[in-house]
Image 1 (cartoon, helix red, strand yellow):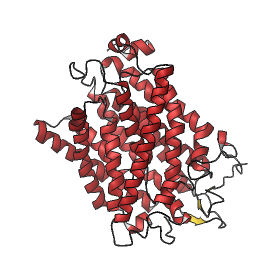
Image 2 (tube, rainbow, N blue to C red; image 1 turned 45 degrees about the horizontal axis):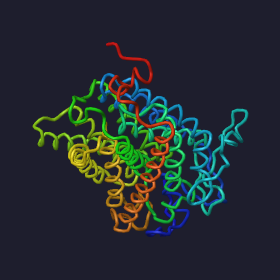
Image 3 (cartoon, one colour; image 1 turned 120 degrees about the vertical axis):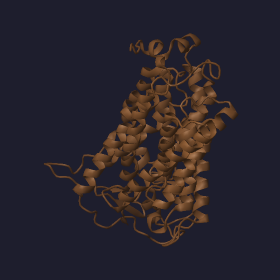
Image 4 (tube, rainbow, N blue to C red; image 1 turned 90 degrees about the vertical axis):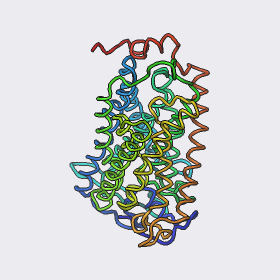
Length: 459
């Protein structure tokens, strides 16, 4: 559990408390304290959580997105998720992990773990040792799991985030452009924001005092805003608003959404860093929020159109999962219920009313669900954060939420949106000027399965 150390306040919290909060509930301890031994129970849970989060991308997100595009683009959509899994694994191993989770400065981490250098130190003859995050800072966070497990767990987050973006530009981006964008965006957007929020000395946690349990800003707002920018830069799909662009196979989408839901327990409960009470609470709040959002989206759609749809209820459940992500380990079940109910209705409006009103083509509602849901969840974390769970004296025991925490959350949302939007726009424009972003009209009409990959679904 997080150790409460002094007052964090709004902007200039003690490094110990900030490190404890930003590293998702892992135990805070003084730099000169003896690290705890490896805990086999914590390690086992984190191994399972890592596999669950990877399951969210392949096959979860791949099937969820693949089922919502047209038949001629299903394989290309599956390919995007699978290839991003491969690409980001290498990027994270070579440079991403080091720049995120080692000591550097408030903006970016250091280079001590480039190519995972030194990660195997101390492992010999079957022995294993714990590691200490942020060694050399005012307060270190000791882990009860091997660093290799923590690194791989975080790798799965770096994998799914750019994969989520593909839903916004589905059916029209060149595969080569997507590969280049994934690498550059991962290093220039995901890694810095993750360091600001979770890394040792990161300024969003340290100076603003914002909290993000499992990725409301780092994963979902980042992905949603990048998706919106990509949709605007690429423009609408051919035939948008004129032709039938309905999903090819909602059965795939339901299976994918179900895998996302199950995998999300690793995403949120795994972010507790071990098999502990915080993990149990995060699991409970995750389930409650997902179910509540599924119900509220379904009811909103039912009232508007007269029919509750399969696509609607699975989208609502995912919206609830998104919204509870930053709050999962910091709120009580009642707060999770409210977050889920609000997220379902607000994301329904974002994915239907706002998109149509503004006229952009967010193909699979990456912004409508992840961007808007992430913003809702991050803000409501400040409203419902429970003192003993959030480890801030701004929300003392018995008090839920605070104005100061809400302001901090709003500031973190703002800086994430600005950074992500600006850098994403620059990257997309640079790629468009060099290798080109969008497939030709003929390739788009033929379908990306054949035009980009030379394959098609026969059945």
